Length: 289
Image (cartoon, rainbow, N blue to C red):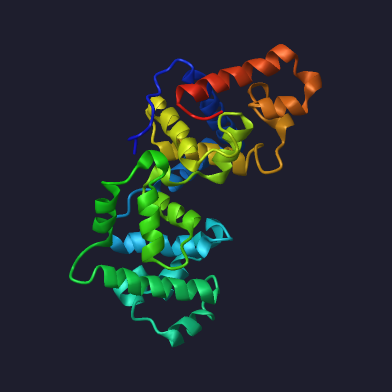
Protein backbone atom coordinates (compact mmCIF):
# COMPACT_ATOMS: atom_id res chain seq x y z
CA UNK A 1 0.00 0.00 0.00
CA UNK A 2 2.82 2.40 0.76
CA UNK A 3 4.80 1.64 -2.39
CA UNK A 4 5.27 4.83 -4.37
CA UNK A 5 4.40 7.10 -1.43
CA UNK A 6 6.86 9.71 -0.26
CA UNK A 7 8.22 9.50 3.29
CA UNK A 8 6.19 11.65 5.66
CA UNK A 9 8.87 12.55 8.22
CA UNK A 10 9.15 16.15 7.05
CA UNK A 11 8.39 18.52 9.91
CA UNK A 12 5.89 20.44 7.80
CA UNK A 13 3.54 17.44 7.85
CA UNK A 14 2.78 18.40 11.44
CA UNK A 15 0.40 21.08 10.15
CA UNK A 16 -1.72 18.47 8.44
CA UNK A 17 -1.57 15.87 11.23
CA UNK A 18 -2.79 18.58 13.60
CA UNK A 19 -5.72 19.20 11.26
CA UNK A 20 -6.57 15.49 11.25
CA UNK A 21 -6.64 15.52 15.05
CA UNK A 22 -8.94 18.55 15.00
CA UNK A 23 -11.22 16.79 12.52
CA UNK A 24 -11.41 13.72 14.75
CA UNK A 25 -12.21 15.81 17.84
CA UNK A 26 -14.91 17.64 15.90
CA UNK A 27 -16.43 14.34 14.75
CA UNK A 28 -16.47 13.01 18.32
CA UNK A 29 -18.03 16.21 19.63
CA UNK A 30 -20.78 16.02 17.00
CA UNK A 31 -21.59 12.29 16.99
CA UNK A 32 -20.08 11.00 20.22
CA UNK A 33 -16.85 9.05 20.57
CA UNK A 34 -18.52 5.63 20.38
CA UNK A 35 -20.49 6.40 17.22
CA UNK A 36 -17.48 8.04 15.58
CA UNK A 37 -15.28 5.04 16.37
CA UNK A 38 -17.98 2.69 15.02
CA UNK A 39 -18.17 4.62 11.75
CA UNK A 40 -14.41 4.41 11.31
CA UNK A 41 -14.42 0.68 12.06
CA UNK A 42 -17.17 0.07 9.51
CA UNK A 43 -15.35 2.03 6.84
CA UNK A 44 -12.08 0.18 7.45
CA UNK A 45 -13.87 -3.19 7.44
CA UNK A 46 -15.64 -2.38 4.18
CA UNK A 47 -12.25 -1.77 2.54
CA UNK A 48 -10.26 -4.59 4.09
CA UNK A 49 -8.85 -7.22 1.75
CA UNK A 50 -11.66 -9.67 0.84
CA UNK A 51 -11.53 -13.06 2.55
CA UNK A 52 -12.18 -15.06 -0.61
CA UNK A 53 -13.66 -14.90 -4.10
CA UNK A 54 -17.23 -14.88 -2.79
CA UNK A 55 -16.52 -11.85 -0.62
CA UNK A 56 -14.73 -10.08 -3.49
CA UNK A 57 -17.60 -10.80 -5.89
CA UNK A 58 -20.12 -9.50 -3.36
CA UNK A 59 -18.23 -6.22 -3.15
CA UNK A 60 -18.13 -5.99 -6.93
CA UNK A 61 -21.91 -6.40 -7.07
CA UNK A 62 -22.41 -3.82 -4.33
CA UNK A 63 -20.32 -1.29 -6.26
CA UNK A 64 -22.53 -1.85 -9.31
CA UNK A 65 -25.72 -1.39 -7.30
CA UNK A 66 -24.30 1.70 -5.55
CA UNK A 67 -23.59 3.51 -8.83
CA UNK A 68 -25.60 6.72 -8.86
CA UNK A 69 -27.12 5.95 -5.44
CA UNK A 70 -24.30 5.67 -2.94
CA UNK A 71 -23.61 2.79 -0.57
CA UNK A 72 -26.27 3.73 2.00
CA UNK A 73 -29.20 2.19 0.07
CA UNK A 74 -27.09 -0.87 -0.73
CA UNK A 75 -26.20 -1.37 2.93
CA UNK A 76 -29.85 -1.15 3.93
CA UNK A 77 -30.87 -3.99 1.62
CA UNK A 78 -27.63 -5.97 1.82
CA UNK A 79 -29.23 -9.07 3.37
CA UNK A 80 -31.95 -9.11 0.71
CA UNK A 81 -29.36 -8.71 -2.03
CA UNK A 82 -27.34 -11.58 -0.62
CA UNK A 83 -30.41 -13.81 -0.55
CA UNK A 84 -31.43 -12.82 -4.08
CA UNK A 85 -27.96 -13.50 -5.46
CA UNK A 86 -27.43 -16.88 -3.78
CA UNK A 87 -25.01 -15.61 -1.19
CA UNK A 88 -22.99 -13.94 -3.96
CA UNK A 89 -21.38 -17.27 -4.81
CA UNK A 90 -20.19 -16.65 -8.42
CA UNK A 91 -20.83 -20.22 -9.62
CA UNK A 92 -24.44 -20.08 -8.38
CA UNK A 93 -25.03 -16.57 -9.72
CA UNK A 94 -23.79 -17.83 -13.09
CA UNK A 95 -26.73 -20.26 -13.19
CA UNK A 96 -29.44 -17.61 -12.69
CA UNK A 97 -31.70 -17.26 -15.72
CA UNK A 98 -33.94 -14.52 -17.13
CA UNK A 99 -36.94 -15.71 -15.13
CA UNK A 100 -34.98 -15.35 -11.92
CA UNK A 101 -33.80 -11.88 -12.95
CA UNK A 102 -37.42 -10.86 -13.59
CA UNK A 103 -38.50 -12.27 -10.23
CA UNK A 104 -35.88 -10.14 -8.50
CA UNK A 105 -37.81 -7.04 -9.55
CA UNK A 106 -40.41 -8.00 -6.93
CA UNK A 107 -37.84 -8.55 -4.17
CA UNK A 108 -36.90 -5.94 -1.52
CA UNK A 109 -33.67 -5.01 -3.29
CA UNK A 110 -32.61 -2.17 -5.59
CA UNK A 111 -34.96 -2.91 -8.50
CA UNK A 112 -32.79 -1.93 -11.44
CA UNK A 113 -32.94 -4.56 -14.20
CA UNK A 114 -29.76 -3.37 -15.91
CA UNK A 115 -27.78 -3.70 -12.66
CA UNK A 116 -29.34 -7.09 -11.90
CA UNK A 117 -28.43 -8.35 -15.38
CA UNK A 118 -24.89 -6.97 -15.03
CA UNK A 119 -24.32 -8.84 -11.76
CA UNK A 120 -25.62 -12.10 -13.25
CA UNK A 121 -23.44 -11.62 -16.33
CA UNK A 122 -20.45 -10.89 -14.11
CA UNK A 123 -21.13 -14.05 -12.13
CA UNK A 124 -20.84 -15.99 -15.40
CA UNK A 125 -17.67 -14.13 -16.35
CA UNK A 126 -16.14 -14.68 -12.91
CA UNK A 127 -17.01 -18.39 -13.04
CA UNK A 128 -15.54 -18.73 -16.54
CA UNK A 129 -12.31 -17.04 -15.49
CA UNK A 130 -11.90 -19.41 -12.55
CA UNK A 131 -12.97 -22.67 -14.18
CA UNK A 132 -10.52 -25.39 -13.24
CA UNK A 133 -10.25 -24.50 -9.57
CA UNK A 134 -8.52 -21.15 -9.89
CA UNK A 135 -9.22 -18.02 -7.89
CA UNK A 136 -9.96 -14.63 -9.34
CA UNK A 137 -8.15 -13.03 -6.42
CA UNK A 138 -5.05 -14.96 -7.48
CA UNK A 139 -5.43 -13.38 -10.91
CA UNK A 140 -5.68 -9.98 -9.24
CA UNK A 141 -2.56 -10.64 -7.15
CA UNK A 142 -0.57 -11.67 -10.21
CA UNK A 143 -1.60 -8.53 -12.09
CA UNK A 144 -0.88 -6.31 -9.08
CA UNK A 145 2.73 -7.50 -8.98
CA UNK A 146 3.36 -5.70 -12.28
CA UNK A 147 1.21 -2.64 -11.61
CA UNK A 148 1.97 0.81 -10.20
CA UNK A 149 0.10 1.77 -7.01
CA UNK A 150 1.54 5.29 -7.08
CA UNK A 151 -0.49 5.89 -10.25
CA UNK A 152 -3.67 4.31 -8.90
CA UNK A 153 -3.24 0.72 -10.16
CA UNK A 154 -4.00 1.49 -13.84
CA UNK A 155 -3.38 -2.06 -15.15
CA UNK A 156 -5.62 -3.62 -12.53
CA UNK A 157 -8.34 -1.11 -13.33
CA UNK A 158 -8.05 -1.91 -17.05
CA UNK A 159 -8.18 -5.66 -16.30
CA UNK A 160 -11.41 -5.30 -14.33
CA UNK A 161 -13.01 -3.24 -17.09
CA UNK A 162 -12.09 -5.94 -19.60
CA UNK A 163 -13.20 -8.83 -17.38
CA UNK A 164 -16.59 -7.53 -16.25
CA UNK A 165 -19.58 -5.64 -17.56
CA UNK A 166 -20.97 -2.30 -16.35
CA UNK A 167 -17.57 -1.23 -15.01
CA UNK A 168 -16.24 2.10 -16.18
CA UNK A 169 -12.98 3.63 -15.03
CA UNK A 170 -14.54 5.06 -11.85
CA UNK A 171 -16.42 1.93 -10.80
CA UNK A 172 -13.40 -0.27 -11.55
CA UNK A 173 -11.22 1.88 -9.28
CA UNK A 174 -13.93 1.89 -6.64
CA UNK A 175 -14.10 -1.90 -6.76
CA UNK A 176 -10.34 -2.13 -6.32
CA UNK A 177 -10.50 0.24 -3.39
CA UNK A 178 -13.19 -1.94 -1.79
CA UNK A 179 -10.76 -4.83 -2.23
CA UNK A 180 -8.10 -3.04 -0.17
CA UNK A 181 -6.22 -1.19 -2.92
CA UNK A 182 -6.15 2.17 -1.16
CA UNK A 183 -4.45 4.11 -3.95
CA UNK A 184 -7.11 3.16 -6.52
CA UNK A 185 -9.53 5.99 -5.76
CA UNK A 186 -10.26 8.87 -3.41
CA UNK A 187 -13.37 9.42 -1.31
CA UNK A 188 -15.20 12.46 -2.72
CA UNK A 189 -15.83 13.95 0.72
CA UNK A 190 -12.24 13.56 1.91
CA UNK A 191 -11.04 14.97 -1.38
CA UNK A 192 -13.40 17.94 -1.07
CA UNK A 193 -12.08 18.75 2.40
CA UNK A 194 -8.44 18.54 1.31
CA UNK A 195 -9.18 20.68 -1.74
CA UNK A 196 -10.82 23.40 0.35
CA UNK A 197 -7.79 23.35 2.64
CA UNK A 198 -5.63 23.89 -0.48
CA UNK A 199 -3.78 20.63 0.24
CA UNK A 200 -4.52 19.26 -3.22
CA UNK A 201 -5.57 20.83 -6.49
CA UNK A 202 -9.13 20.21 -7.62
CA UNK A 203 -7.81 18.56 -10.80
CA UNK A 204 -5.20 16.37 -9.07
CA UNK A 205 -5.39 12.64 -9.88
CA UNK A 206 -6.90 10.37 -7.24
CA UNK A 207 -3.52 8.78 -6.60
CA UNK A 208 -2.08 12.14 -5.50
CA UNK A 209 -4.90 12.63 -3.01
CA UNK A 210 -4.41 9.12 -1.65
CA UNK A 211 -0.66 9.62 -1.39
CA UNK A 212 -1.22 12.59 0.88
CA UNK A 213 -3.65 10.66 3.10
CA UNK A 214 -1.25 7.68 3.19
CA UNK A 215 1.58 9.99 4.26
CA UNK A 216 -0.56 11.43 7.05
CA UNK A 217 -1.54 7.94 8.20
CA UNK A 218 2.06 6.76 8.13
CA UNK A 219 3.20 9.69 10.24
CA UNK A 220 0.41 9.06 12.76
CA UNK A 221 0.94 5.28 12.78
CA UNK A 222 -2.61 4.74 11.57
CA UNK A 223 -4.42 2.75 8.91
CA UNK A 224 -4.90 5.08 5.90
CA UNK A 225 -8.54 4.02 5.58
CA UNK A 226 -9.20 5.18 9.16
CA UNK A 227 -7.74 8.63 8.39
CA UNK A 228 -9.79 8.83 5.20
CA UNK A 229 -12.90 7.77 7.15
CA UNK A 230 -12.43 10.66 9.59
CA UNK A 231 -12.00 13.17 6.77
CA UNK A 232 -15.01 11.74 4.93
CA UNK A 233 -17.21 11.85 8.05
CA UNK A 234 -16.27 15.50 8.62
CA UNK A 235 -17.17 16.28 5.01
CA UNK A 236 -20.44 14.32 5.01
CA UNK A 237 -22.08 15.15 8.33
CA UNK A 238 -19.83 17.91 9.61
CA UNK A 239 -19.37 21.52 8.53
CA UNK A 240 -17.45 20.73 5.33
CA UNK A 241 -20.36 19.22 3.42
CA UNK A 242 -21.11 20.13 -0.20
CA UNK A 243 -22.65 23.39 0.97
CA UNK A 244 -20.28 24.15 3.86
CA UNK A 245 -21.03 25.79 7.18
CA UNK A 246 -17.68 27.53 7.51
CA UNK A 247 -18.85 29.67 10.41
CA UNK A 248 -19.22 26.50 12.53
CA UNK A 249 -16.04 24.81 11.35
CA UNK A 250 -13.22 24.02 13.79
CA UNK A 251 -10.76 24.43 10.90
CA UNK A 252 -11.86 27.93 9.93
CA UNK A 253 -8.67 29.66 11.09
CA UNK A 254 -6.60 27.11 9.16
CA UNK A 255 -8.69 26.96 6.00
CA UNK A 256 -7.94 29.36 3.12
CA UNK A 257 -11.39 28.70 1.62
CA UNK A 258 -13.20 29.52 4.85
CA UNK A 259 -11.05 32.56 5.55
CA UNK A 260 -11.72 33.91 2.07
CA UNK A 261 -15.45 33.85 2.81
CA UNK A 262 -15.02 35.93 5.99
CA UNK A 263 -12.52 38.67 5.12
CA UNK A 264 -13.59 40.81 8.04
CA UNK A 265 -12.44 38.08 10.45
CA UNK A 266 -9.31 37.16 8.56
CA UNK A 267 -6.41 39.63 8.75
CA UNK A 268 -3.98 39.22 5.89
CA UNK A 269 -1.25 37.72 8.07
CA UNK A 270 -3.57 35.07 9.50
CA UNK A 271 -5.14 34.28 6.14
CA UNK A 272 -1.77 33.81 4.52
CA UNK A 273 -0.11 31.67 7.15
CA UNK A 274 -2.33 28.53 6.90
CA UNK A 275 -2.12 28.48 3.11
CA UNK A 276 1.66 28.70 3.12
CA UNK A 277 1.94 26.02 5.79
CA UNK A 278 -0.33 23.64 3.92
CA UNK A 279 1.39 24.24 0.61
CA UNK A 280 4.72 23.44 2.24
CA UNK A 281 3.30 20.21 3.65
CA UNK A 282 1.87 19.43 0.23
CA UNK A 283 5.26 19.89 -1.40
CA UNK A 284 6.81 17.61 1.19
CA UNK A 285 4.61 14.79 -0.13
CA UNK A 286 5.57 15.52 -3.73
CA UNK A 287 2.02 16.61 -4.58
CA UNK A 288 0.96 19.26 -7.11
CA UNK A 289 -0.33 22.56 -5.72
